[in-house]
Length: 102
Image 1 (cartoon, rainbow, N blue to C red):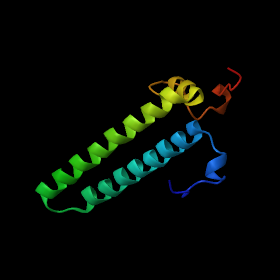
Image 2: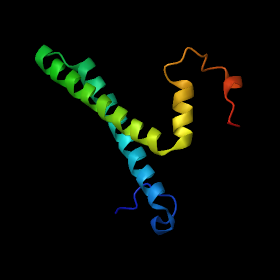
Image 3: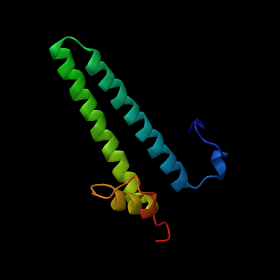
Image 4: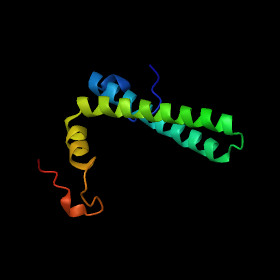
C-alpha cells in the first residue's frame, strides 16, 4: 500500500485507521470530481455533452454519499456529528450549539 497522504509510519497505524484514511481520501477524490464535473457543466456549450457531464457529476455525488455513510457507520464521532447536524434546521453558524461532552 502506498504511504501517500500518511503523516505517521503506516506500520504504526491500526487497521481501522488505515481503512478510515482510505475512505477519507476516497471521499476527497469524489468531491473533487464533483467540482470538476460542475465546472465542465457550466462551461459546456453543447446540450448533449452538458447532460452527460451533469449525469457524471451526479454519479460522483452518489459515490461521495456512499463513502460518507461508510465513515458514519464505522466512526462514532462522525455518526454523532452527522446525526446532530445533517437534515436539521439548527443554526449551524451558532458555535454555542456544539456540545462535545456527549
